[in-house]
Image (spheres, helix red, strand yellow):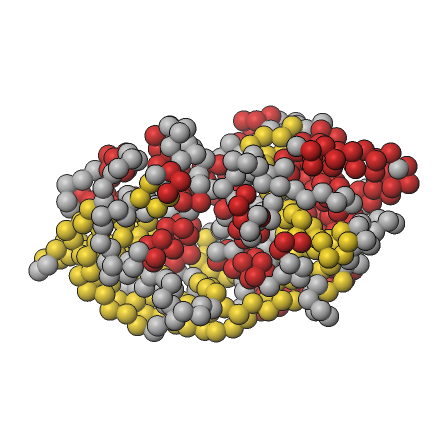
Length: 545
Protein backbone atom coordinates (compact mmCIF):
# COMPACT_ATOMS: atom_id res chain seq x y z
CA UNK A 1 0.00 0.00 0.00
CA UNK A 2 2.87 2.38 0.82
CA UNK A 3 4.40 1.76 -2.60
CA UNK A 4 1.10 2.60 -4.31
CA UNK A 5 0.91 5.80 -2.21
CA UNK A 6 4.40 6.86 -3.33
CA UNK A 7 3.46 6.07 -6.92
CA UNK A 8 0.46 8.37 -6.64
CA UNK A 9 2.71 11.12 -5.27
CA UNK A 10 5.04 10.62 -8.25
CA UNK A 11 2.14 10.78 -10.69
CA UNK A 12 0.81 13.94 -9.06
CA UNK A 13 4.26 15.49 -9.37
CA UNK A 14 4.37 14.58 -13.04
CA UNK A 15 0.91 16.04 -13.54
CA UNK A 16 1.99 19.27 -11.85
CA UNK A 17 4.87 19.68 -14.28
CA UNK A 18 3.23 21.82 -16.96
CA UNK A 19 5.72 21.06 -19.72
CA UNK A 20 5.52 17.29 -19.25
CA UNK A 21 1.75 17.43 -18.94
CA UNK A 22 1.55 19.27 -22.25
CA UNK A 23 4.05 16.83 -23.76
CA UNK A 24 1.91 13.85 -22.77
CA UNK A 25 -1.29 15.41 -24.09
CA UNK A 26 0.26 16.26 -27.44
CA UNK A 27 1.66 12.74 -27.78
CA UNK A 28 -1.67 11.16 -26.84
CA UNK A 29 -3.38 13.15 -29.60
CA UNK A 30 -1.37 11.16 -32.15
CA UNK A 31 -3.54 8.11 -31.38
CA UNK A 32 -6.09 8.31 -34.17
CA UNK A 33 -8.89 6.23 -35.63
CA UNK A 34 -7.43 6.91 -39.08
CA UNK A 35 -4.15 5.22 -38.15
CA UNK A 36 -5.94 2.30 -36.54
CA UNK A 37 -8.12 1.83 -39.60
CA UNK A 38 -5.13 2.00 -41.93
CA UNK A 39 -3.19 -0.62 -39.94
CA UNK A 40 -6.12 -3.06 -39.75
CA UNK A 41 -7.10 -2.61 -43.39
CA UNK A 42 -3.56 -3.63 -44.33
CA UNK A 43 -2.92 -6.37 -41.77
CA UNK A 44 -6.34 -7.91 -42.42
CA UNK A 45 -6.04 -7.92 -46.20
CA UNK A 46 -5.61 -10.94 -48.46
CA UNK A 47 -2.09 -9.73 -49.29
CA UNK A 48 -0.95 -11.10 -45.92
CA UNK A 49 -2.34 -14.55 -46.76
CA UNK A 50 -3.66 -15.15 -43.25
CA UNK A 51 -0.32 -14.40 -41.51
CA UNK A 52 0.60 -18.01 -40.82
CA UNK A 53 4.09 -18.87 -39.53
CA UNK A 54 6.38 -20.80 -41.90
CA UNK A 55 4.60 -19.34 -44.96
CA UNK A 56 5.04 -16.47 -47.40
CA UNK A 57 2.40 -14.70 -45.31
CA UNK A 58 4.85 -14.63 -42.40
CA UNK A 59 7.50 -12.86 -44.46
CA UNK A 60 5.00 -10.23 -45.58
CA UNK A 61 3.67 -9.75 -42.04
CA UNK A 62 6.93 -9.45 -40.15
CA UNK A 63 8.49 -7.16 -42.73
CA UNK A 64 5.44 -4.90 -42.62
CA UNK A 65 5.65 -4.69 -38.82
CA UNK A 66 9.39 -4.02 -38.90
CA UNK A 67 8.77 -1.24 -41.42
CA UNK A 68 6.11 0.33 -39.22
CA UNK A 69 8.34 0.15 -36.14
CA UNK A 70 11.09 1.93 -38.04
CA UNK A 71 8.61 4.51 -39.33
CA UNK A 72 7.42 5.45 -35.82
CA UNK A 73 10.98 5.70 -34.52
CA UNK A 74 11.46 2.45 -32.61
CA UNK A 75 14.89 0.88 -33.06
CA UNK A 76 15.53 -2.84 -33.66
CA UNK A 77 15.17 -4.67 -30.33
CA UNK A 78 17.44 -7.63 -31.11
CA UNK A 79 20.86 -6.06 -31.64
CA UNK A 80 20.58 -4.72 -35.19
CA UNK A 81 17.45 -6.68 -36.09
CA UNK A 82 13.72 -6.34 -35.50
CA UNK A 83 13.47 -10.15 -35.64
CA UNK A 84 14.05 -12.81 -33.00
CA UNK A 85 14.27 -16.22 -34.63
CA UNK A 86 12.24 -18.89 -32.83
CA UNK A 87 13.14 -22.52 -33.73
CA UNK A 88 10.08 -24.75 -33.95
CA UNK A 89 8.86 -27.97 -35.49
CA UNK A 90 5.74 -28.17 -37.62
CA UNK A 91 3.80 -31.44 -37.41
CA UNK A 92 0.84 -32.38 -39.59
CA UNK A 93 -0.99 -35.35 -38.09
CA UNK A 94 -3.15 -37.63 -40.21
CA UNK A 95 -5.59 -40.01 -38.51
CA UNK A 96 -8.16 -41.91 -40.57
CA UNK A 97 -10.35 -43.29 -37.81
CA UNK A 98 -10.44 -43.85 -34.08
CA UNK A 99 -11.79 -47.23 -32.98
CA UNK A 100 -13.17 -47.99 -29.53
CA UNK A 101 -12.73 -51.65 -28.61
CA UNK A 102 -13.61 -54.18 -25.96
CA UNK A 103 -11.41 -57.06 -27.11
CA UNK A 104 -12.10 -59.08 -29.04
CA UNK A 105 -15.07 -56.90 -30.01
CA UNK A 106 -15.02 -53.57 -31.89
CA UNK A 107 -17.68 -51.35 -30.33
CA UNK A 108 -17.73 -48.34 -32.65
CA UNK A 109 -15.49 -45.73 -34.25
CA UNK A 110 -15.19 -41.94 -34.02
CA UNK A 111 -15.09 -39.87 -37.18
CA UNK A 112 -12.05 -37.63 -37.37
CA UNK A 113 -12.05 -34.69 -36.97
CA UNK A 114 -15.83 -34.31 -36.54
CA UNK A 115 -15.99 -36.41 -33.38
CA UNK A 116 -12.34 -36.76 -32.36
CA UNK A 117 -9.83 -33.96 -32.96
CA UNK A 118 -6.49 -35.67 -32.31
CA UNK A 119 -2.89 -34.70 -33.05
CA UNK A 120 0.53 -36.03 -32.11
CA UNK A 121 3.29 -33.74 -30.80
CA UNK A 122 5.94 -36.44 -31.25
CA UNK A 123 8.72 -36.12 -33.80
CA UNK A 124 7.81 -39.58 -35.06
CA UNK A 125 6.52 -40.36 -38.53
CA UNK A 126 4.20 -43.26 -37.69
CA UNK A 127 2.49 -44.71 -34.62
CA UNK A 128 0.23 -47.73 -34.35
CA UNK A 129 -1.86 -47.82 -31.19
CA UNK A 130 -3.86 -51.00 -30.58
CA UNK A 131 -6.41 -51.59 -27.81
CA UNK A 132 -4.75 -49.10 -25.47
CA UNK A 133 -6.62 -49.02 -22.13
CA UNK A 134 -8.64 -45.90 -21.30
CA UNK A 135 -9.01 -44.30 -17.86
CA UNK A 136 -11.34 -41.54 -16.68
CA UNK A 137 -9.46 -39.07 -14.46
CA UNK A 138 -12.11 -36.50 -13.54
CA UNK A 139 -10.84 -33.03 -14.43
CA UNK A 140 -7.24 -34.23 -14.74
CA UNK A 141 -6.08 -31.91 -11.95
CA UNK A 142 -3.51 -32.17 -9.17
CA UNK A 143 -3.85 -29.00 -7.06
CA UNK A 144 -2.41 -29.35 -3.54
CA UNK A 145 -3.53 -25.84 -2.54
CA UNK A 146 -7.14 -26.91 -3.17
CA UNK A 147 -6.68 -30.38 -1.66
CA UNK A 148 -7.42 -31.93 -5.04
CA UNK A 149 -5.86 -34.92 -6.81
CA UNK A 150 -7.75 -36.53 -9.68
CA UNK A 151 -4.89 -38.98 -10.26
CA UNK A 152 -4.84 -40.35 -6.71
CA UNK A 153 -4.89 -44.14 -6.81
CA UNK A 154 -4.93 -44.26 -10.63
CA UNK A 155 -2.37 -46.04 -12.76
CA UNK A 156 -2.37 -44.20 -16.10
CA UNK A 157 1.09 -45.13 -17.37
CA UNK A 158 0.91 -46.30 -20.95
CA UNK A 159 -2.83 -45.60 -21.04
CA UNK A 160 -5.18 -42.95 -22.45
CA UNK A 161 -6.64 -40.47 -19.99
CA UNK A 162 -10.10 -38.99 -20.57
CA UNK A 163 -10.86 -35.76 -18.65
CA UNK A 164 -13.37 -32.92 -18.37
CA UNK A 165 -12.52 -29.37 -19.46
CA UNK A 166 -12.28 -26.43 -17.00
CA UNK A 167 -12.49 -26.60 -13.18
CA UNK A 168 -15.00 -28.23 -10.82
CA UNK A 169 -16.08 -24.79 -9.59
CA UNK A 170 -17.69 -23.83 -12.89
CA UNK A 171 -20.31 -26.54 -12.83
CA UNK A 172 -21.36 -26.44 -9.17
CA UNK A 173 -21.95 -22.76 -8.51
CA UNK A 174 -19.81 -23.21 -5.38
CA UNK A 175 -17.60 -20.12 -5.03
CA UNK A 176 -15.39 -21.94 -2.51
CA UNK A 177 -14.51 -24.73 -4.96
CA UNK A 178 -11.31 -23.63 -6.71
CA UNK A 179 -12.32 -20.07 -7.76
CA UNK A 180 -15.95 -20.79 -8.47
CA UNK A 181 -16.91 -19.81 -12.01
CA UNK A 182 -13.55 -18.15 -12.63
CA UNK A 183 -11.21 -20.59 -14.36
CA UNK A 184 -7.86 -21.31 -12.76
CA UNK A 185 -4.89 -22.48 -14.80
CA UNK A 186 -5.83 -26.04 -13.82
CA UNK A 187 -8.84 -25.70 -16.08
CA UNK A 188 -6.83 -25.01 -19.24
CA UNK A 189 -6.27 -27.73 -21.81
CA UNK A 190 -2.54 -26.93 -21.80
CA UNK A 191 -2.28 -27.79 -18.10
CA UNK A 192 -4.29 -30.99 -18.58
CA UNK A 193 -2.02 -32.11 -21.42
CA UNK A 194 1.08 -31.39 -19.34
CA UNK A 195 -0.23 -33.14 -16.23
CA UNK A 196 -1.25 -36.24 -18.17
CA UNK A 197 2.27 -36.43 -19.60
CA UNK A 198 3.79 -36.02 -16.13
CA UNK A 199 1.66 -38.94 -14.95
CA UNK A 200 2.98 -41.11 -17.78
CA UNK A 201 -0.19 -41.22 -19.88
CA UNK A 202 0.36 -42.27 -23.48
CA UNK A 203 -2.55 -40.11 -24.65
CA UNK A 204 -5.16 -37.67 -23.39
CA UNK A 205 -8.63 -36.81 -24.66
CA UNK A 206 -10.57 -33.84 -23.29
CA UNK A 207 -14.36 -33.92 -23.40
CA UNK A 208 -15.49 -30.73 -25.12
CA UNK A 209 -18.20 -28.62 -23.55
CA UNK A 210 -18.78 -25.14 -24.97
CA UNK A 211 -19.20 -23.15 -21.76
CA UNK A 212 -16.18 -24.74 -20.13
CA UNK A 213 -13.94 -24.42 -23.17
CA UNK A 214 -15.05 -20.90 -24.05
CA UNK A 215 -15.53 -21.82 -27.70
CA UNK A 216 -17.34 -24.32 -29.89
CA UNK A 217 -15.98 -27.73 -30.88
CA UNK A 218 -15.21 -26.30 -34.34
CA UNK A 219 -12.11 -24.63 -32.85
CA UNK A 220 -10.18 -27.80 -31.80
CA UNK A 221 -11.60 -29.56 -34.87
CA UNK A 222 -10.02 -27.03 -37.24
CA UNK A 223 -6.81 -26.97 -35.26
CA UNK A 224 -6.40 -30.73 -35.59
CA UNK A 225 -6.55 -30.72 -39.41
CA UNK A 226 -3.99 -27.92 -39.74
CA UNK A 227 -0.23 -28.24 -39.25
CA UNK A 228 0.66 -27.61 -35.61
CA UNK A 229 3.74 -25.85 -34.30
CA UNK A 230 5.71 -26.95 -31.24
CA UNK A 231 8.79 -25.68 -29.47
CA UNK A 232 11.89 -27.78 -29.93
CA UNK A 233 12.44 -29.88 -26.79
CA UNK A 234 15.70 -31.11 -25.28
CA UNK A 235 14.26 -34.30 -23.75
CA UNK A 236 13.55 -36.40 -26.85
CA UNK A 237 9.78 -35.95 -26.46
CA UNK A 238 9.72 -37.44 -22.95
CA UNK A 239 7.73 -34.48 -21.59
CA UNK A 240 4.72 -35.00 -23.89
CA UNK A 241 2.17 -37.72 -24.49
CA UNK A 242 2.12 -39.60 -27.79
CA UNK A 243 -1.16 -37.99 -28.77
CA UNK A 244 -3.47 -35.30 -27.45
CA UNK A 245 -6.90 -34.08 -28.41
CA UNK A 246 -10.56 -33.47 -27.83
CA UNK A 247 -13.72 -35.47 -28.34
CA UNK A 248 -17.09 -33.88 -29.04
CA UNK A 249 -19.90 -34.06 -26.52
CA UNK A 250 -21.70 -36.52 -28.80
CA UNK A 251 -18.64 -38.75 -28.99
CA UNK A 252 -18.35 -38.63 -25.19
CA UNK A 253 -21.99 -39.69 -24.89
CA UNK A 254 -21.27 -42.72 -27.09
CA UNK A 255 -18.08 -43.60 -25.24
CA UNK A 256 -19.59 -43.48 -21.75
CA UNK A 257 -22.94 -44.78 -22.97
CA UNK A 258 -21.15 -48.00 -23.91
CA UNK A 259 -20.50 -48.54 -20.20
CA UNK A 260 -23.92 -47.17 -19.16
CA UNK A 261 -22.73 -43.86 -17.73
CA UNK A 262 -24.35 -40.46 -18.37
CA UNK A 263 -21.71 -37.81 -19.07
CA UNK A 264 -23.59 -34.89 -17.48
CA UNK A 265 -24.13 -36.87 -14.28
CA UNK A 266 -20.51 -37.99 -14.32
CA UNK A 267 -19.33 -34.39 -14.64
CA UNK A 268 -21.22 -33.42 -11.50
CA UNK A 269 -19.86 -36.45 -9.64
CA UNK A 270 -16.32 -35.49 -10.71
CA UNK A 271 -16.87 -32.07 -9.11
CA UNK A 272 -17.07 -33.65 -5.66
CA UNK A 273 -13.97 -33.58 -3.52
CA UNK A 274 -12.56 -37.07 -3.14
CA UNK A 275 -14.03 -38.33 -6.42
CA UNK A 276 -12.14 -41.39 -7.64
CA UNK A 277 -11.33 -41.94 -11.31
CA UNK A 278 -11.69 -45.36 -12.82
CA UNK A 279 -10.72 -47.57 -15.80
CA UNK A 280 -13.28 -47.42 -18.61
CA UNK A 281 -12.99 -51.12 -19.44
CA UNK A 282 -12.59 -50.25 -23.12
CA UNK A 283 -9.58 -49.65 -25.36
CA UNK A 284 -8.70 -47.32 -28.20
CA UNK A 285 -6.98 -48.08 -31.50
CA UNK A 286 -5.68 -45.58 -34.04
CA UNK A 287 -2.93 -45.11 -36.59
CA UNK A 288 -1.12 -41.77 -36.71
CA UNK A 289 1.04 -40.48 -39.53
CA UNK A 290 3.06 -37.31 -39.04
CA UNK A 291 4.62 -35.04 -41.64
CA UNK A 292 7.47 -33.22 -39.91
CA UNK A 293 9.20 -29.97 -40.82
CA UNK A 294 11.86 -28.03 -38.92
CA UNK A 295 12.09 -24.26 -39.39
CA UNK A 296 12.17 -20.90 -37.63
CA UNK A 297 9.54 -18.23 -37.21
CA UNK A 298 10.14 -14.70 -35.96
CA UNK A 299 9.05 -12.55 -33.07
CA UNK A 300 9.09 -8.89 -34.08
CA UNK A 301 10.05 -6.13 -31.65
CA UNK A 302 11.15 -2.52 -31.53
CA UNK A 303 12.67 -0.60 -28.64
CA UNK A 304 12.61 2.99 -27.38
CA UNK A 305 15.45 3.19 -24.88
CA UNK A 306 14.83 4.92 -21.58
CA UNK A 307 16.55 8.19 -20.77
CA UNK A 308 17.48 7.41 -17.15
CA UNK A 309 16.78 3.73 -16.48
CA UNK A 310 17.24 2.01 -19.85
CA UNK A 311 17.84 -1.36 -18.15
CA UNK A 312 14.19 -1.44 -16.97
CA UNK A 313 11.30 -1.79 -19.39
CA UNK A 314 7.59 -1.81 -20.08
CA UNK A 315 6.49 -4.30 -22.77
CA UNK A 316 3.41 -3.97 -24.99
CA UNK A 317 2.38 -7.17 -26.77
CA UNK A 318 0.02 -8.32 -29.53
CA UNK A 319 0.60 -11.50 -31.52
CA UNK A 320 0.95 -11.17 -35.31
CA UNK A 321 0.09 -14.73 -36.39
CA UNK A 322 -3.17 -16.28 -37.54
CA UNK A 323 -4.15 -19.42 -39.50
CA UNK A 324 -3.17 -18.69 -43.08
CA UNK A 325 -5.08 -20.42 -45.86
CA UNK A 326 -7.24 -23.34 -44.79
CA UNK A 327 -10.62 -25.00 -44.89
CA UNK A 328 -13.13 -23.09 -47.04
CA UNK A 329 -16.25 -21.49 -45.63
CA UNK A 330 -18.71 -19.72 -47.91
CA UNK A 331 -16.15 -19.70 -50.69
CA UNK A 332 -13.41 -18.04 -48.61
CA UNK A 333 -10.29 -19.91 -47.49
CA UNK A 334 -8.09 -17.04 -46.24
CA UNK A 335 -8.16 -16.64 -42.46
CA UNK A 336 -7.33 -12.92 -42.42
CA UNK A 337 -7.65 -12.36 -38.67
CA UNK A 338 -8.66 -8.70 -38.90
CA UNK A 339 -9.89 -8.74 -35.29
CA UNK A 340 -7.66 -11.62 -34.20
CA UNK A 341 -5.24 -9.97 -34.06
CA UNK A 342 -5.10 -7.08 -36.52
CA UNK A 343 -6.89 -4.66 -34.22
CA UNK A 344 -4.50 -5.35 -31.32
CA UNK A 345 -1.41 -4.96 -33.50
CA UNK A 346 -2.86 -1.60 -34.54
CA UNK A 347 -3.36 -0.81 -30.83
CA UNK A 348 0.34 -1.49 -30.12
CA UNK A 349 1.59 0.52 -33.11
CA UNK A 350 -0.60 3.48 -32.16
CA UNK A 351 0.71 3.43 -28.59
CA UNK A 352 4.27 3.21 -29.91
CA UNK A 353 3.67 6.20 -32.16
CA UNK A 354 2.45 8.18 -29.16
CA UNK A 355 5.62 7.33 -27.19
CA UNK A 356 7.76 8.39 -30.13
CA UNK A 357 6.02 11.79 -30.21
CA UNK A 358 7.15 12.64 -26.67
CA UNK A 359 9.70 15.44 -26.44
CA UNK A 360 10.82 14.09 -23.06
CA UNK A 361 11.82 10.48 -23.61
CA UNK A 362 10.47 8.19 -20.85
CA UNK A 363 12.83 7.25 -18.04
CA UNK A 364 12.38 3.53 -18.59
CA UNK A 365 12.66 1.63 -21.86
CA UNK A 366 9.52 0.81 -23.86
CA UNK A 367 9.39 -2.36 -26.00
CA UNK A 368 6.75 -3.16 -28.61
CA UNK A 369 6.60 -6.94 -29.09
CA UNK A 370 4.66 -8.87 -31.72
CA UNK A 371 5.08 -12.57 -30.85
CA UNK A 372 4.70 -15.40 -33.33
CA UNK A 373 2.67 -18.59 -32.88
CA UNK A 374 0.26 -17.39 -30.22
CA UNK A 375 -2.43 -19.41 -31.92
CA UNK A 376 -0.25 -22.50 -31.47
CA UNK A 377 0.04 -22.15 -27.70
CA UNK A 378 1.80 -18.82 -26.96
CA UNK A 379 5.05 -20.19 -28.38
CA UNK A 380 6.61 -16.89 -29.44
CA UNK A 381 6.00 -15.16 -26.13
CA UNK A 382 7.23 -18.23 -24.23
CA UNK A 383 10.46 -18.06 -26.23
CA UNK A 384 10.81 -14.31 -25.69
CA UNK A 385 10.45 -14.64 -21.92
CA UNK A 386 13.27 -17.21 -22.00
CA UNK A 387 15.43 -15.00 -24.23
CA UNK A 388 14.32 -11.44 -23.38
CA UNK A 389 15.82 -8.16 -24.55
CA UNK A 390 15.83 -6.98 -20.93
CA UNK A 391 15.78 -9.58 -18.11
CA UNK A 392 12.41 -10.55 -16.71
CA UNK A 393 13.33 -9.26 -13.25
CA UNK A 394 13.82 -5.82 -14.85
CA UNK A 395 10.64 -6.07 -16.92
CA UNK A 396 8.29 -3.84 -14.95
CA UNK A 397 5.02 -4.84 -16.58
CA UNK A 398 3.48 -6.37 -19.69
CA UNK A 399 0.45 -4.72 -21.30
CA UNK A 400 -1.21 -7.06 -23.79
CA UNK A 401 -4.27 -7.09 -25.98
CA UNK A 402 -5.95 -9.66 -28.16
CA UNK A 403 -9.10 -9.60 -30.29
CA UNK A 404 -10.17 -5.98 -29.80
CA UNK A 405 -13.66 -5.64 -31.24
CA UNK A 406 -14.10 -2.50 -33.40
CA UNK A 407 -17.59 -1.68 -32.13
CA UNK A 408 -17.19 1.88 -30.86
CA UNK A 409 -16.65 3.56 -27.51
CA UNK A 410 -17.36 1.62 -24.34
CA UNK A 411 -18.19 2.78 -20.83
CA UNK A 412 -16.31 -0.09 -19.24
CA UNK A 413 -12.71 -1.20 -19.01
CA UNK A 414 -12.91 -4.97 -18.62
CA UNK A 415 -9.80 -6.39 -16.97
CA UNK A 416 -9.08 -10.06 -17.54
CA UNK A 417 -7.25 -11.11 -14.39
CA UNK A 418 -8.59 -8.27 -12.26
CA UNK A 419 -7.53 -8.62 -8.65
CA UNK A 420 -4.16 -10.18 -9.45
CA UNK A 421 -1.82 -7.18 -9.24
CA UNK A 422 -1.46 -3.52 -8.29
CA UNK A 423 -1.79 -2.62 -11.98
CA UNK A 424 -5.50 -2.52 -11.13
CA UNK A 425 -4.89 0.79 -9.30
CA UNK A 426 -3.28 2.41 -12.33
CA UNK A 427 -6.09 1.14 -14.52
CA UNK A 428 -8.71 2.64 -12.21
CA UNK A 429 -6.97 6.03 -12.40
CA UNK A 430 -6.60 5.95 -16.17
CA UNK A 431 -10.20 4.81 -16.65
CA UNK A 432 -11.52 7.58 -14.41
CA UNK A 433 -9.78 10.16 -16.62
CA UNK A 434 -11.86 8.79 -19.50
CA UNK A 435 -15.04 8.70 -17.39
CA UNK A 436 -15.10 4.92 -17.58
CA UNK A 437 -15.46 2.25 -14.92
CA UNK A 438 -13.34 -0.88 -14.38
CA UNK A 439 -14.85 -4.34 -14.02
CA UNK A 440 -13.61 -7.89 -13.67
CA UNK A 441 -14.05 -9.96 -16.82
CA UNK A 442 -17.60 -11.39 -16.56
CA UNK A 443 -16.50 -14.28 -18.80
CA UNK A 444 -13.55 -15.32 -16.64
CA UNK A 445 -14.78 -18.92 -16.83
CA UNK A 446 -13.34 -19.05 -20.37
CA UNK A 447 -9.80 -18.68 -18.99
CA UNK A 448 -8.73 -15.78 -21.21
CA UNK A 449 -6.16 -14.79 -18.58
CA UNK A 450 -4.23 -17.92 -19.56
CA UNK A 451 -4.86 -17.73 -23.31
CA UNK A 452 -2.88 -14.75 -24.56
CA UNK A 453 0.68 -13.47 -24.76
CA UNK A 454 0.87 -11.76 -21.38
CA UNK A 455 0.63 -15.15 -19.64
CA UNK A 456 4.23 -16.32 -20.26
CA UNK A 457 5.26 -13.01 -18.64
CA UNK A 458 2.97 -13.84 -15.72
CA UNK A 459 4.69 -17.22 -15.34
CA UNK A 460 7.98 -15.33 -15.04
CA UNK A 461 6.51 -13.20 -12.25
CA UNK A 462 5.89 -10.06 -14.33
CA UNK A 463 2.64 -8.25 -13.41
CA UNK A 464 0.56 -8.04 -16.57
CA UNK A 465 -2.50 -6.19 -17.77
CA UNK A 466 -5.08 -7.36 -20.30
CA UNK A 467 -7.72 -4.62 -20.42
CA UNK A 468 -10.21 -3.39 -23.00
CA UNK A 469 -13.68 -1.97 -23.46
CA UNK A 470 -15.99 -4.92 -23.88
CA UNK A 471 -19.13 -4.96 -21.78
CA UNK A 472 -21.15 -1.73 -22.13
CA UNK A 473 -21.42 0.40 -25.26
CA UNK A 474 -21.67 4.13 -24.55
CA UNK A 475 -24.28 4.41 -27.30
CA UNK A 476 -26.16 1.10 -27.28
CA UNK A 477 -25.73 -0.38 -23.80
CA UNK A 478 -24.87 -3.79 -22.33
CA UNK A 479 -27.21 -6.12 -24.19
CA UNK A 480 -26.06 -4.81 -27.55
CA UNK A 481 -22.39 -5.27 -26.58
CA UNK A 482 -23.07 -8.79 -25.30
CA UNK A 483 -24.73 -9.70 -28.59
CA UNK A 484 -21.74 -8.33 -30.54
CA UNK A 485 -19.36 -10.49 -28.49
CA UNK A 486 -21.60 -13.53 -28.95
CA UNK A 487 -21.85 -13.00 -32.72
CA UNK A 488 -18.07 -12.69 -32.97
CA UNK A 489 -17.33 -15.88 -31.00
CA UNK A 490 -19.97 -17.96 -32.78
CA UNK A 491 -19.62 -16.68 -36.34
CA UNK A 492 -16.24 -14.99 -36.81
CA UNK A 493 -13.63 -16.21 -34.30
CA UNK A 494 -10.99 -18.36 -36.06
CA UNK A 495 -12.97 -18.35 -39.30
CA UNK A 496 -12.39 -16.89 -42.77
CA UNK A 497 -15.16 -14.39 -41.95
CA UNK A 498 -12.74 -12.47 -39.68
CA UNK A 499 -12.32 -9.82 -42.38
CA UNK A 500 -11.88 -6.06 -42.32
CA UNK A 501 -15.20 -4.35 -43.04
CA UNK A 502 -14.78 -0.60 -43.66
CA UNK A 503 -18.50 0.00 -43.30
CA UNK A 504 -19.01 -1.62 -39.90
CA UNK A 505 -15.63 -1.26 -38.16
CA UNK A 506 -15.75 1.60 -35.64
CA UNK A 507 -12.30 2.34 -34.18
CA UNK A 508 -13.27 5.01 -31.63
CA UNK A 509 -13.31 2.52 -28.76
CA UNK A 510 -9.97 0.98 -29.70
CA UNK A 511 -8.47 4.48 -29.87
CA UNK A 512 -9.75 5.08 -26.34
CA UNK A 513 -8.29 1.75 -25.19
CA UNK A 514 -4.95 2.70 -26.76
CA UNK A 515 -4.99 6.07 -24.99
CA UNK A 516 -5.71 4.30 -21.70
CA UNK A 517 -2.82 1.85 -22.17
CA UNK A 518 -0.52 4.70 -23.24
CA UNK A 519 -1.40 6.56 -20.03
CA UNK A 520 -0.67 3.52 -17.85
CA UNK A 521 2.60 2.73 -19.63
CA UNK A 522 3.66 6.37 -19.54
CA UNK A 523 3.09 6.54 -15.78
CA UNK A 524 5.05 3.32 -15.24
CA UNK A 525 7.85 4.42 -17.55
CA UNK A 526 8.32 7.70 -15.69
CA UNK A 527 8.31 6.42 -12.12
CA UNK A 528 10.48 4.16 -10.01
CA UNK A 529 7.46 2.05 -9.15
CA UNK A 530 7.46 -1.74 -9.47
CA UNK A 531 3.92 -3.15 -9.70
CA UNK A 532 3.30 -6.03 -7.32
CA UNK A 533 1.17 -9.14 -7.22
CA UNK A 534 -1.56 -8.97 -4.63
CA UNK A 535 -1.34 -11.19 -1.56
CA UNK A 536 -3.99 -13.63 -2.80
CA UNK A 537 -2.43 -14.15 -6.22
CA UNK A 538 -1.01 -17.56 -7.07
CA UNK A 539 1.72 -15.76 -9.05
CA UNK A 540 3.08 -13.63 -6.21
CA UNK A 541 5.81 -16.11 -5.27
CA UNK A 542 7.15 -16.10 -8.86
CA UNK A 543 8.19 -12.43 -8.59
CA UNK A 544 9.84 -13.10 -5.26
CA UNK A 545 12.09 -15.90 -6.55
